[in-house]
Length: 159
Image (cartoon, rainbow, N blue to C red; front, side, top):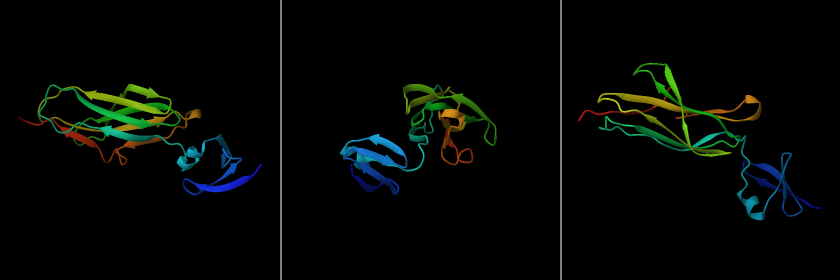
C-alpha cells in the first residue's frame, strides 16, 4: 500500500491509496483517474439554484405566467416554494409550492404559474429552497440571493 497526497478542490489534501482509492477528510470513495481530476471538495453539500426562467413584462392579460427553476439539492429537496408579495409595498408574502416537472434525488426541475391579471398588475416574488438534510436541519437558499429585500418582478402592461 502506498499513499500519495494531492491537493484537490478548495485546498483540501486528499490521500490517494493504491491507485483509485481516495480519502478526503475521513471520506472514502472508489474513483477513477478521471474522477480524481473532476473532484471538487468545497464546503458542505448545500442546495443551489442552477437556472431560473422568470417572466418579463407582458401585455398578456390571460396568463398563466410561468416561473421555472432547475435546482441542485445534494441532500434532496425538502421544500421548494414561491413567495408572492401581497402588495406593492407589502412585507407580507403568500407562499405557494413549486410543482415538480422532473425530480431527482439531488434536485430537479420545478415550476409555478401565476393566473392572468388585468393590465397594471405587478408581481413581486422570490423562490425559497430547503434541502432534505437528515435531522430536519436542512439548509435554506433563496433566489435572488438577497430576497426578500431584492425581489423578482414583472408587470402586466397597458396596451
